[in-house]
Length: 597
Image (tube, rainbow, N blue to C red; front, top):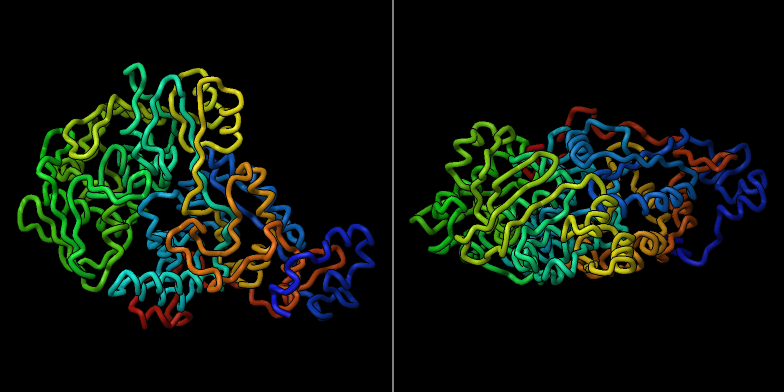
């Protein structure tokens, strides 16, 4: 019988155990005579209480995670394992996982900002590369190490056509799903609210009221002509060196609202030219022609040298471990034949560049970065106000931990902000929503569904907007240490989760459950055909019986108190020592594929 057989409509094993008592239920629990498990053999070591970390400082998203977490914990307990849910700041959590310094954590309960450049999933798929695992500061937060996955990932990256690449993306995701390297839960929802009596909102579209969708910052205006006050969490105010942010919403505010990339997707995910035009000459060459009227906020023209410097600086910062979002790009050369032309050439086909890297990064003012010492020290550079920017907003004041004050800049060729925008920091969502009610702020992006319902039901002059997106809430299993290094355990955890209850409780029932472990959501334009994918459970309410069956078939068992134990012969050692990276001896593809962990 396969793992998916009987996945719905089965016996509620835990209810039966409670009803008839543990002593009479040892058979149901997979325990033979003498307390053996997994077909009657001896039990291995007991599985310790799991630790699951979530991000504690991310406004409405934190609220949503805190409502979901107990439901995840309840599901895992159905297979005889306890779970401790631990709040950790996003910066601490991501840094620890990227450097493999916290092996107490077994699962990272995360989500991914639905930035428009992630409509191409390259960045997210890169996060599972074998050569990004281990103590190297790279963003394989799961420490997932699989040769076949990495081979497929690299092959699609260098495809000669978009059609061939999309087929390769589907195969790459299918491999991840078969291994259940990550657990999808539900789509991320961009939810925000605004004061209808104080702001004429525009630019919401499919992107929603979130900083990942910059459009509303320029396409909205206050009814009074006063400063537009936008509530945010404090992360974006903590440094003027915005490229060092590991949290994507704060980074998006700086990259897309304050600065501008060459081009990007607008609120309806339509391609929009900002500072210039982009031509894909072929799979190894991209041509950028800057607009003649593109200016920085200090009135300097945006030149080809600024663009070249931007992507060379991102490469420097990425190699130094200072810019977490910097992805590797196979540059052959970045040429500047004149002041307005930039030619990117690659050593191999790299179609993703035009709609990922080129869309993500706001263009930097070369002189400002050189003066700040960012070339020599990417992570340590700081900038004095006013901060020169390439977008329609210029930072005139930065009060760390409190606010970012911006003024409109009229030298932007595409956008013009109607009034100053003040990004005001609030320590938690409750104070943010209270400020909206009092009229102390006008727009609250990235709030939770309960807050949205409160706004719509109780506030006379406010309205909340809801947009389901192309990224997902995920369980990022820590795949190099026990118990999550075992594929069957990851699949068992995925099967226990009552996704429907989570959505009803935390997302107001407004999205559909994610049943396939794909990293992206079912709303993503590159979501693979379902018949290619492993399904986490047939029933969105979860199936502990399916989970127990999978474990039992692999030799796991339960003692007389229904505590889960490893198979007797299980190797519980980590896949590599702490402080190190995966070795070519254990993963031969490191040498075969020319990887550099």
